[in-house]
Image 1: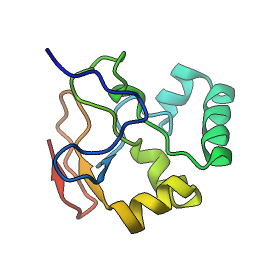
Image 2: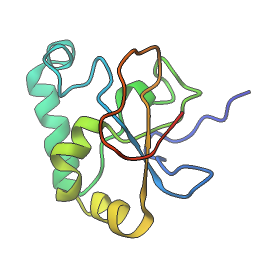
Image 3: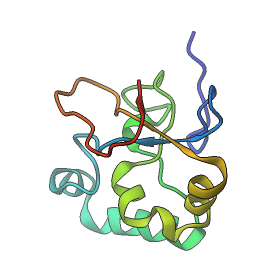
Length: 120
């Protein structure tokens, strides 16, 4: 049975680094389709609350009650790119803990373009 982790537990069990998606998932709230799916005002509220509290945003596709519960939580690539270093948690991840890039869960023909290590 897969271990169900807390949604904010984005630490990689093997490396101890913070798991950040290597690219936006297909329904990312930073894509037009994702904003439409969740609603622009709700998306803006979620972003503002995370930035104001200094927290990173866990990708909705990686939540334990989402479509891929066995994948484990990971930081949203869209949030990381736009707001990651504006948060205390993001600065701690980048400069103290380190980050590991992981490909988003689910089928995809996209490839990583960050130049950073990607694990699956």
